[in-house]
Length: 451
Ligand code: ADP
Ligand code: MG
Image (cartoon, rainbow, N blue to C red; front, top):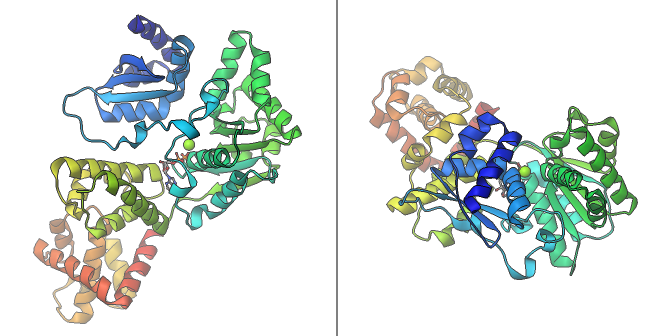
């Protein structure tokens, strides 16, 4: 029975996502059951499960709900018998006091229990967005309407929106807060059209106190959805209800979005989340490690692993988190202490993908400039400390900032042996702790090289 319905749903999904996506991602899914509003699938790999969760959740939830009633969540189980230990955070459903009523009568999407203000790490690149979100979360007078958050993928837009919703719910006994993605907005709209329930649809959306629409760039070019969104938007603003919108770019830069919508979106407060910097990434990693360490008490880390990740995986926090998740899963499986080498091994694919192609030669040049020595002396055989120290620093940076192996680095330093490089890297690691000047130099060089 369920299988038959799934067969039907698949057809509908194919229409929506296209044959290519369908064959690559949806066809491999094995639908198992619906269990307390959770649709369970078997997937051949974690990767497929994650990809589907991130990219096709809305379509799946929409289609499943249409036929099975209230389906609020998807779960993907890897089909093999040996399943890598994954942190269970994704699957937690928070019951009780915080359970939103949105799943029943309100047209919203569930809130992720991990996305709250106390798990959001604040740094220079996101402090304004965070401050604005906090203010809105206090739920006092509507101060800026709408609040428009924008920024690149994985920088925390969805996290902040959920945090606002959680905060409002904790402050008011029964707030009517609806969070959903623009895509879901469109699906509901189309569904209402199809079922001739437009009156209900309008009424539902116009009765909320706070409306949050995520990834609004999605409705660009979809004319009737835009139109409906615009009316909903105006109706709520007129009633002085708070609206929060996110997008991957500024309102003025969203193509195929009607001018009148753009200008209305700009009426409130527009804040952007900048790409993360090193400090913020390190902060986020440290806070995640704290969260994980209760779950994996046995996993231990070299301290430089986090610095390495913060350095090498730039901007997208989702990728950063994913790396850490994989490291923890790996370490808890094989019961190993995580060193830099283990990290590089375990995350080779991610590191390669986010490589910013700093070369050893570039590092050598910058470092010799900084210490005022000739490049030939850095690479040459001289052993005087004036040359040896900068050389070691360059080796250290080469190890940290490129994916070259120790022998490869050695070769670029006048054919030195990999043990010499290893010794140099160790020495600088020690010096960094003992000698403030060296730590400062390293920091400056790193910035210069990253710029
Ligand atoms: P976006 O919606 O902008 O694409 P998300 O809000 O989904 O990004 O964030 C991606 C992931 O990164 C989420 O797991 C989120 O918790 C995490 N994240 C992003 N920014 C921060 C931050 N400043 N502190 C903690 N976690 C963050
Ligand atoms: Mg998002």
